[in-house]
Image 1: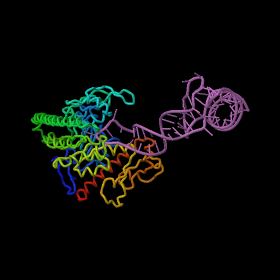
Image 2: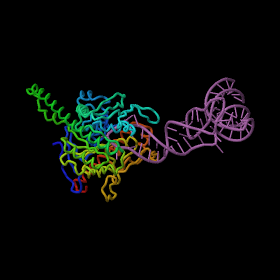
Image 3: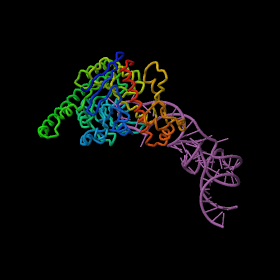
Length: 426
RNA sequence: UCCCCUGUAGCUCAAUUGGUAGAGCAGGUCGCUGUUAACGACAAGGUUCCAGGUUCGAGACCUGGCGGGGGAG
């Protein structure tokens, strides 16, 4: 069974569960570390094991631009290619419609079908990375070499099949913040059509695979080492559909209903954390929370910050991917576990975790532990002054130490949350 | 003792033929939510070594100090 709920909270929609993949089990609620280009930046895969990171998130667009999906497939898939031997999810590339556009004006140009191939940033003409969105798909420019790449739902699925992550995403359009109702409706409906095409492609690839496997089996059956790998091949990837709908309640509800009723293995909520306020972001999740499936895992794309997570778990979110702990770590922001002895009246994530900026001058002479209340390798072995020093002198180890610690704290947070649900506190 | 070079922001350096000083780094503050991110934004910071002089006007030119570097004896 791909997903099962082990404990359902009576206080909220929060639940403790398990996602079963062929590369391991993910205990949920869980954090998904971001490893866009096939690496959780600055962290060796073996350290991820130590941190107990359960799952990582790679990006199809980035892997298509480099090194290309063919070579990953040839290497035996993303797990083998990268050494990331934990469950992996891949994003479809849909987020890049938002993130590579950068400028609203560029989207407006796209909307009005006047495709300016150049746009200005600081009076400098730039080639756009997002060239065109149409019903068929999207044309991007590679951030690696500027070459033009086309993404359609079919291609995204094909790419993701070759990459070989355990959980893959249907191709969607991450709608920019500030889009009007009309555009949001149009884009959301397009995402729905893309979902059906993603599912069709996903199925047909599976059928083809099955056929070729059966053919191969005929030759293999008599072999001594033969074990029936059919199941593994047939169900080695799971497909999630993505909910859009922007900041409009009715569109969000239409979207969740559409996605949940479609034949997917899990659902993801997209189009959040694109510049809206926290309140708006939570609202968008709340609107759909009552319609989320009970028998399928629910992923929230791109969230969260420490103080977002608990509330969203209560809305029924099982997994979260976010660059926050890893990016902040590289920028010198270190999570700190607050003194657990202090009385915590209302149980929330913020009351548990703090942030400090290790680059601040005051840490230069501070020999205290990076985090007094943390038992990770970093906190057992290094002090603030040393970490500050590594950052100020741009020593590469800085990024590794900080990322290790932040991911460790993230895992702690989710451990508390799972425990809290199991013991009825959440 | 003499000769040459030099002195501008905490540091390293800019500043057209003299038109009342700019940048990088450091220091400071802030930001980062499906990673174009070991990133980005902002603010602050100077009686241009001192004292005279030339000039409408000097960081630039002149004189004399003082400090630094180099060379010759």
